Length: 206
Image (cartoon, rainbow, N blue to C red; front, side):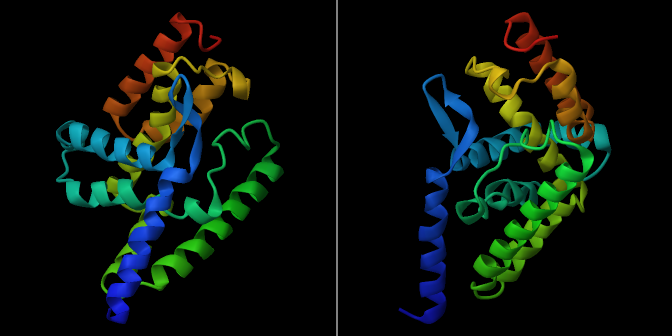
């Protein structure tokens, strides 16, 4: 097998391990969601909402690019792990900043190592897409980041998990969600629907 083909095959096998990485929200009432499931659902949500995103923004949004961002943005978590978005929620500003910077350094090292081992044009494309997502550098990236933030709240509602495990109330959820979902009126409206339904069902303290 040629070296380039071997590198691509190895990467395919590597990405299959995303099924093994568990998230902090549930996929069903009985089991955690995998990062692979999460990434697939982000892609589906972005596809479903793409026309709405274009309508409200007045922009031509590259759907193929958005789907690529959804599918690859968490690949680094195979090596780096998937820390909860709540892991800094109760921390002071200095601790939150330090944890965020450490996470960013770890994930960037993984991205450069894993994507850098791939032949062009795929390797450079993956690294550029990952950086675009992390920086929220384009409208597409900012929308995917918004969907990424909304998705676990949706799953906590749909599975009945709630937020007792992270000791969060509605105000805490707003602080976590709104900075990202506010990129889109549609995402904001969906978040408000999820939030109100969770409060009504007793899954989230008002």
